[in-house]
Image 1 (tube, rainbow, N blue to C red):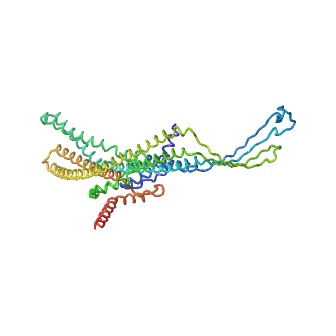
Image 2: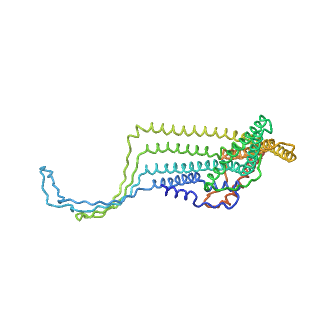
Image 3: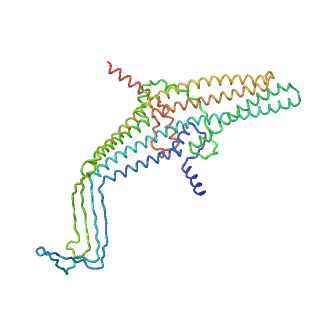
Amino acid sequence: MSVQTAADRVAAFRGNDPITGPLTLEQATARALKYNLDRRTKLMEEAIALNQLDVAKLDMLPKLVAQSGFSSRDSDRTTLSRNIATGELVPSNFVSQDRTHVVSQLGLTWNMLEMGVGYLNTLQAADRVLVAAEKRRKAMHVLMQDVRTVYWRAVSAQKLKGEVQRIIASAEEALVDSRKTEEERIRNPLDALRYQRQILENLRLLESIEQELSSAQIELATLINVPQGTVLELVDTAFNVSSEALKISLDQLEETALVNNADLREQQYNGRIAQTETRKVLYRLFPNLTFNYGLNYDTDSYLVNQKWRDAGVQVSYSLLNLFTAGTQKKLAEAGVALADQRRIAVQMAVLAQVHLARLQLANATSQFGRADEIWNVDHKISDIVINREAARAQSKLERISNETAAVLSLLRRYQAAAQMQAAESRLQATLGVEPRIGGVDDIGTDELAQKITLHGLIWQSIMADQAARKQTKEQQSK
């Protein structure tokens, strides 16, 4: 078991490009799309569905069967004859077959009903390939959304780790000084205890911040499939607060989602599969026509023609279909109705998700702006308090409290940025838009990161489509 576990660990990271420098968001997303294990599983499921399509196509071919048999008996094959006039049996001393002989046959059979049903199975298998592709697209959208959210959490952890540890050390030093003061009775014991409680409260906040940020690197390493314990250096780029997505009309967003949303397209393909199932029921109501052609050979020396060919046509019909056709048809039609109802429900849900995702993006953008303002104010207050403490006009407790507030504000700023990025990614996933990357195995991570960077222009593309539609409507109205 340990050998298999070690082999699995090696296989999990086989073929991954090494990380040679700081990671940008685009590079982290590229590595996730290329190496994430769950995404690889989805790609393999799509490949299996494609192989099933190839197998379904083979079902339409004629059946070619080769068979050979050996026959042996311990006595000669002789027969009796009956006189048609007298009805008496007349013995015969003639042998008509070798005791031992071999019979071989190569037969070709083409069943027209099976060919028709095989054709419909091929159509369904093709739609299942498309369903698997839509599931892969949805998994990609969720993966990109998770990477964006975790990346900014990891950036905030990288940014705040040293600052938080410095303030914790300063607070613990102040706590030790206060306890010494309490023991030496230099200050009022009640004031010293209140001072210590405030220090402990600040330590609790700082430690909760440290715990909240500690898991970000682990989650990011899992998403981009690098060994746990790898120290990731992330690029702390400027926050891109873009309002372009909010400038697009809801009508345009709804139209884009109805065309591209992965869940909705999956239900459309499932509806086509259900409709094809009704055609299979109708096909089975027709008579079956079978063509046979065979090459035969028998080593029996008593045969005049040891080699011969035969051909035939057979028409058959299952009488049971007359009694079960109505039930089967109702079942197939119920499946179509269910698929239609699911598609309608998903369509309404997608439209609701578009409105909700746009509202969440607007709220997240507003919250980030407010969090940024609060951080700027707390940062200025902290600088002033530090300067006043240096001039001995301010206590160490107040400096620690204000530094803690500033760190907490900076954390909330990063969290708001992560929520804003996640909201924008959620809206993109709802619309069903993704980078045009093709096969990830054919390109390197750097080239893939460049394509993901270009994907950031998706809002300009949608806005251009909106302007083109508006211009077309104006021309039609004139």
